[in-house]
Image 1 (cartoon, rainbow over the protein chains, first blue to last red):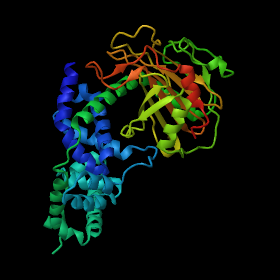
Image 2: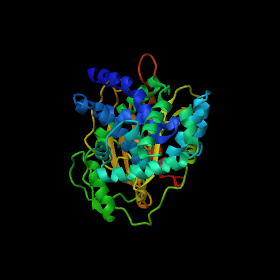
Image 3: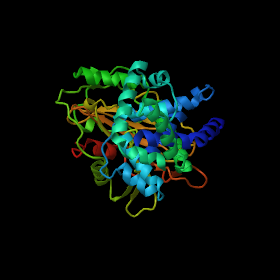
Image 4: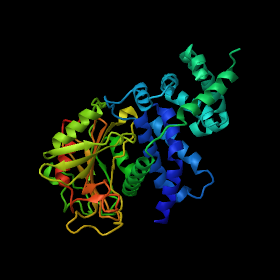
Length: 165
Length: 275
């Protein structure tokens, strides 16, 4: 039971951050909940092996990302587009900001989105992102440059407005 | 001047800004993660090395002797019909047989149904009752629900996974039997015995029927995995209770046995409705 309490402590402390990360990666509130649950389940299974490692957080992020990138499933027609979820979840002016940015993020291919989130939300270096995603640093930089260009184009005129808020 | 460094700085601020006040249901997520982790750990224990053995049998596409991981003696007898390969509570017990399975070649088939259609199919195959599906449990291919048979107020966890190899999808199906796991707590009186058996099903598919060890609360699953010649994998699972907490426990054990037999669940997995 000691093992379980150790895991619970970790999970409660990190779930919110993992959710933020998942939300940016998948762009859907419910899918983010599911993704974090699936991640915690895998971390739970590996807990005995990893609990004494220095960076369990990084391990959990890797699991989350790989779960997201590798998962394939039957489509659910009732899946809610990100704009609806976000607008429904927030009643204040920040809803517009979220919708605009999340729409731009979601327009990126999943791996590109992962690079952007790791670089700019997690503050990871290109080398770290490369290690997490199993690719070369130069490939990460290339994807990053293209992703930024796509984001810039997608945000367009809204970009200036975003920073006034 | 619109430099890349400008948008990089802006992006960092924006991403932090739009996530700073997200308020996810932490308790729900953590408890769900633990439940799924416990379930995953039980499944992982019984999968083991048997997966590789069976996948080899599937790839070769001809009659291949599959050595039962239960550690038995060779048996060259090939099941000749459905009856000879039926799986019931008694026959699920650890067996020493090592049947010879074959997987006829067939055009690869992709799964076309939606999750909702699959939910409806499974519910239609179950005895009358109602299933409340969990909208969140889809990330790892598995879709979970709570099945309440008609006229009963007791729930049972059900789960399905439908996937196809030619989409590069690796489902969680158990293709093969490994050494049975030990119960973590007292097994309810009248419960199905722990065990696993492989069989060949009509149409050339291979089925693995597994009765899992129970957890510390007496909660366990019956799991059916079928891989069809067209590459489609169907996995159905039903438990003897729900993962709804009660009496301070994270699960509720509703009965010693799930509400359908392994035979019935196998028939459901073989249904032509999964397409």
